[in-house]
Amino acid sequence: MTSAAGRSVSLVLVRRINAPARQIFTAWTDPKWLVRWLIPGAGALREAVIDPRPGGAYRLEGLDPDGTRYQLCGRYIDVAPERRISSSWEYEGAAAGLCGPPTRVDVDLRPLGADACELTLTHGELQGEEAAATHRILWTICLDRLVWSLVPPPDEPDFRPSLGAIAELYGESHRLLQDAFDSRPLANTLRKMMVTSTLTTEHRAFIAGRDMVFLATVDHRGFPTCSYKGGAPGFVRVLDDQTLALPSYDGNGMYLSAGNVAANAKVGLLFIDFEQPHRLRIHGAARLVRDEAELAAFPGAELLLVVKVYEAFVNCSRYVHRYQRAETSPFVPGEPRGDEMAPWKNLDVLRDALPGRDRVRREEAGSRSMTREEYLARLKRGET
Image 1 (spheres, rainbow, N blue to C red):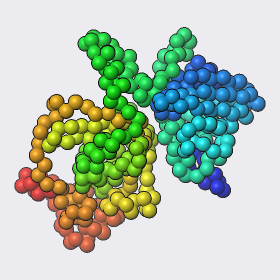
Image 2: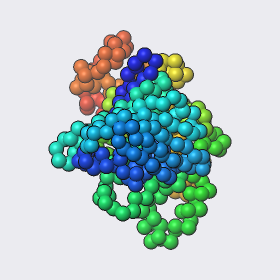
Image 3: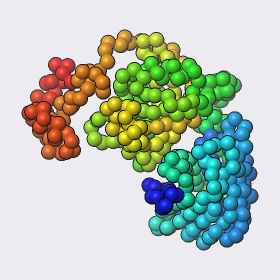
Image 4: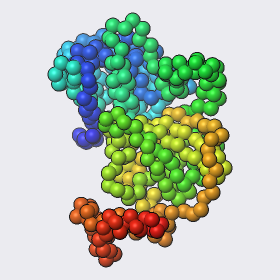
């Protein structure tokens, strides 16, 4: 969540972590552990020099996937073992969204028993909502990596930095299978040839012609969720070579994908052409946009999922079945029946649970209640 204070903005993230406060505090103050997880996106943290005491300085040297160097530096303001770490925070590098005057980061730890802790991260003095949104995505990635870094015992001698999206597309489990099937050289070559951190001209043209995408998100329990999203051809728009916008239309009110993104920015997208078999996979970090001015460019959208692309690559189309496209759904925004309410919202068991806006639409349309049996019969007749 963000809260304005004058012109500056504070970003607050709260995580329950299944590890003791002592271990999490060590992960923030031990250089060999810090380089394992404090990596905002792709790239690597090459060196960490820290003096974790009030007035002590720190300097973190990083490397983006394209070889560009960056630095995070500042001074510790308050250090209370196993309870609190406060410091100034300044980024020096090529990422324009992260540049600016020094800010402040506060990390508070609240033990929840012997083996769990609530971590509250406050990044204050950010220059506006856009800066807060960018830092939310990056801190979400880092906190995910912090959790993963807690899996090995803290005294493990070899803390190798995770190099990020492009450099470390493959983990140990992938390598074991590649070696078992003698495909490691092939996998390395394909990674080098095909995986990019930006959208190529071919990628952009392919996305512009698609009328569907499969969206993968991760829920609060760690379960991956895959959802079909459909619209008019080109409904997913490429905003620039590292950004996509996916409109979210009226649905069943569960907001599973959007809710997942609100808590965990990581997403996967799969675009498929079934007529001329081809597919494109994208990994990225998403944020929700509800600004009316931005939504105006996407008729019918309740909100947008704006995705920062970290990896894009084409997959083999050998096993993509060939289907012929018959027609666009008549209920897609902009189509003749795009404003109609979904018939299942007239089920008698759901009518009283509908949001106010749907109750108004139902009354204006003069629609009657349906039993479950009537609705199932309608589906059998092909009436949607």
